[in-house]
Amino acid sequence: MKGDGFVQGCIEPVSGCTGFFHGCIGLPSGCTGFAHRCIDRLLCRTGFFHRCIDRLQPDTGSVHGCMKQPAGFGGEFRCRKCASNHYILYICVVLEWHQLLSRLPGIAFDVLYLGIIIGTIVVIILDNRNPVKTLSWVLVLTFLPVVGLVFYLFFGRSNRRERIISRKLYNRLVKRPKAEYLSQETIALPVAYGRLISLLQTTAQALPFEGNRIEIYASGLPFLRSLLRQIGRAEHHIHLEFYIFEDDGLGRMVRDALVAKARAGVEVRVIYDDVGCWHVPKRFFEEMREAGIEVRSFLKVRFPQFTSRVNYRNHRKIVVIDGRIGFVGGMNLADRYFRGPSWGTWRDTQLLLEGKAVHGLQTAFLLDWYFTDNTLNSSSRYFPTLQPLGSSLVQVVTSEPIGQWKEIMQGIVAAIAAARTYFYMQTPYFLPTEQVLAAMQSAALSKVDVRLMLPLRADNRITHLGSCSYLGDVLQAGVKVYFYRPGFLHSKLMVSDDAFSTVGSTNLDFRSFEHNFEVNAFIYDRDTALQMRDIFLQDQHECVQLFAKNWAKRPVWKKCMESVVRLMAPLL
View 1 (cartoon, helix red, strand yellow):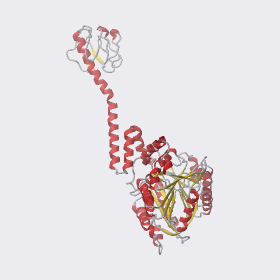
View 2 (tube, helix red, strand yellow):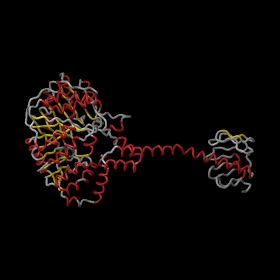
View 3 (cartoon, one colour):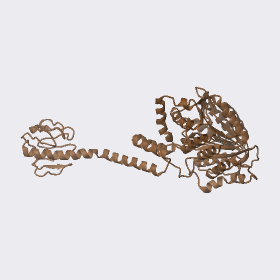
View 4 (cartoon, helix red, strand yellow):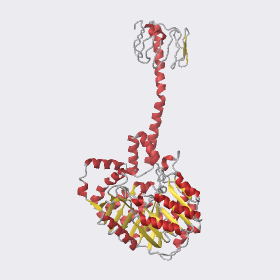
């Protein structure tokens, strides 16, 4: 080492008293020793340091702040071999520790985040979910680290072990419907669907009520007319529950009708979904409240409860008037459900129920009201005594992400398995669970005429791509697939063997089966089933049939896109 202070290892050449440093220390200016990066300013002879070292007292070598007094250090900065060697080496050690300490926050964050990711994956695995869904979340968390964690907090947490209401309060709520059920002298249960009825009664507490009258609406205008007519006839109470209650021409028309009845002394309660009505002005609902209507939003999404709630939505469409008339189906209260999209008509299905089956709709609404308002309404005036008005046997079946069973999905699987001649189904989205897919394939392979109708053009491109990815699976098994051409098919209609049918809010997808609050009417009646079959066949005349040979020839890029979306199907 030369007298100019060359130190190997930590720093490169040091030039005399000018102190030219590379590596750990930047460039000091002359004898004043100004250093960039690790040290701001070094004054030769006085030894004043910023950042790494507070102050070096001359002659004593005492360093305050980062260093104590170095052994054998004379305190005066001189470009001699000994002094330079000891002095510079000591600074390098300090600078290395300073760099390590400056990186500690980043290292700590990386370790913490890795722990959170691993912990989240362990929780998902231990939750014993569907393997496909579990693998989907593991892939998202692995390949989209930050975004994946945010997605899981918003959409992935499971609440199936929670309860909406205590068993005691639930028994109070269903006391009167059970009394009406038990008062039925004889119930002629169809032999072919005895197991299905028992399944739904056990899992969903769906009581079968006979003697109901049913009207079917295959478009929005007849439903709207009937709804406004029944609202106008209400005498005691009106209960409405919709996923979307839009502030547009149709929504304001229904709102004004409700306001008029509230001012006339009729009890009016409205439940809307907070996410479904995110963009609806608050003033729209405030005007209802000012008129005396009780309005509640379902699972209000507000920070810090923002994470998991956004994934669990109330997709139900229920109307109950005086406990005697009920509506259920797939239509919301918005213009587009009646006028249709820009590219065509809106095809949907809604039912009017009159009879004891309305008790099932009333129970579903009052249970949701308790969930939103923590008020239990179990008075007899909400469950009046009703006489038989028709020939339909009906079960009102609800399902939710809270609870042990997937009631409507299990009911659909059992209904498909019970089919002997045909099973027709309409749905806007086809992202089936393994159970539903296997039931459809098994029925078709057993020579049951299974037909699936989807919209040719959907309102959600991503979901439609996912739906298309499953069509090859059902086509190969012999399922007949039809694309509805005139507009958007939003109907959730199923009919089988001229004996069974179901209509409600449930789509054939993971979201409806696992994440949403849904409701369907399961109907065991020949006349209703024949009407449903005729509606399906009329729609089929407006469809183009899909064949396996032609479907296999679609472009490779489209197949790739469908396959990628399918991986995320359980999360859509």
